[in-house]
Length: 165
Image (cartoon, rainbow, N blue to C red; front, side, top):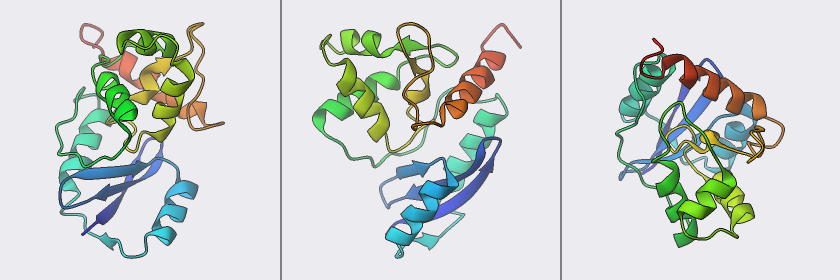
């Protein structure tokens, strides 16, 4: 059975959805998670089952956590899974381009598909798609016109990179 919690963060209220197996969805924007809750009316509010995720998000936003250790239950194509797995290796406070990701996964021509996999990422922040930027250094391709969140997350991480505290 899936459950949810609403987490108040510095970037706004975040919807967290857990299945029996683990974290399966994070919606960063209220207008998106309100739609999600309407479409999934069988979800039950359960703060206790979501507590590990909310605790780790709190630590992340306080600059005390750089990686996440929560059970995951995410679904995607085999290509998306490869991309998401690679994104999880991008170090905290660092960025790479969509082209870099394509090269690293061995498919240099898949730049647009990398963007599609980032867009389909069901658990942003946990799988840090915000760390992928344009090869010109521009903050492109994050939740449509919501690139301010990508910018905020990257600046937040820069503040807490080892040695800069």
